[in-house]
Image (cartoon, rainbow, N blue to C red; front, side, top):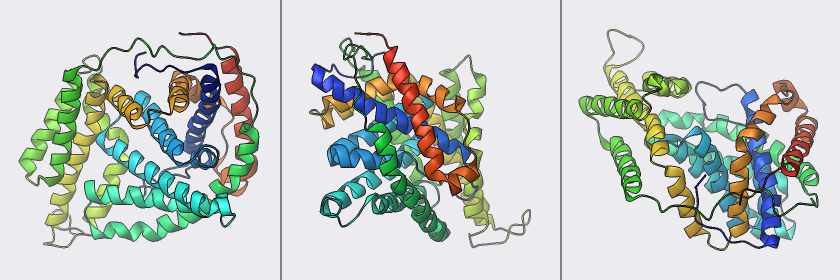
Length: 385
């Protein structure tokens, strides 16, 4: 697996990397817990944000810069296996990095002076995470002022879930704050045999980004239909053994429902004859935005084929040259990501009602189980250097 620039670290740094990898893997497991929560059609991206528990712990333990790298690595690991697209990457990076930056600043200014605690960090982090995502949704999905009608719901969700996340952070920290006896010769990835990133890969990734972003400023329906066809045919040509790739965006039907609700019911204009409850302008806006979203979701196949994950990791190495242990932690977590997802899904599913009304008990027991399983994986690891 060649995904990053060579990393040369000593045993002390590798020990720290393994400790951080445990936190990253737990964050992945907590993301899996969120699958228990149903999605709402008008708020399809709304999640409890349990992985922010680890973000808070990371900020307090390792500081602002390291926490920003952790957030980027968590997004990179998910994208490596599930794919990057312009839309998902924009949402994840904007919401994640903005909330991490604000929580870090709050901790430095007030937290270290005892003026705020983890609950305050959790609430503020949730507020800014939602604010960042709402801004991205407005600019690239639905430039409709009715979108801001969601703000009361998002504020309420941020306060509730943020307080839960912040309140759980100390308990989860006690579970993961263990002095593990780690063999520093295990769980490393071959990072010294990486081939230079091909220029053609860089060119195609940059071109895909440029074309995708340009669609935001195109209102010609014929051009947008042509773009959707082009992106879809390109995706299929890159996955000839998987012709159903043509319809990949349908998996994200909740987003299309959201676009429909946002445009069809809240756009003024001439009443449409075929659908009296909406307008011709609304139907046109809905069609155009759906075509843009279709294109953006299909970019996942292009980015995967031309190794966007390598470019992303290469950028992290340049931005954080002195964070070798954290970068190595990302590589270790990447190696075990599929197994952790399998384990997380195999654990007894936590009922939604339990998560809502007894979150401390539910997540504490879940994290304890995950720590034991992760420790078992580490203990049985192989040297891959």
